[in-house]
Image 1 (cartoon, rainbow, N blue to C red):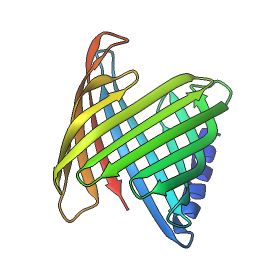
Image 2 (tube, rainbow, N blue to C red):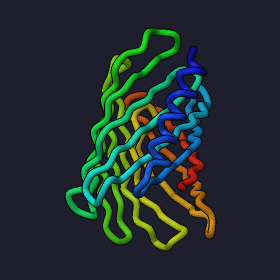
Image 3 (cartoon, rainbow, N blue to C red):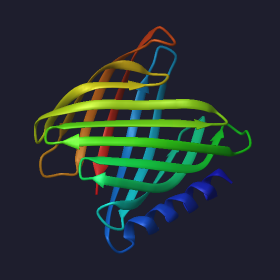
Image 4 (tube, rainbow, N blue to C red):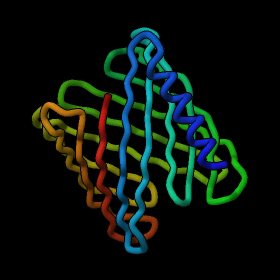
Length: 189
């Protein structure tokens, strides 16, 4: 059942990306290293812009303990801001599916970019945020915070002439009072 649901969600996301107009697709593998365990979390994010101000996005994430799919409109009142509102379903372990809502805010200008994502659903609330300064086309650094992992410095390295970015962060979790790390491998298309 879970595999069928995932396949249908990925097919729906592919339809968003292949529709006429401007579209993008990002796939990422995050490796979270905490004192208790190492967790591998793949995710896919797809966007489709209808014009300079209105678009749609979708996101799917699945790991051993958690799965979610959300989709919804994006609004860009100016080139340096994008606001997203999404709704969908989540599933924790083998429990029944429940609703999940997501609000996101991206700000960017020149070398600077910031992203905040806030989620709430039956499985509780979650957030991630980051502020990055790009020192060169291939190098960025800043700070990030993510619930259940922590807050701390983040470094991004983009491999020239490829769509691949590798990033990592050493974080301190204030809720769990632990030191953790997170590494990501991301490909943008």
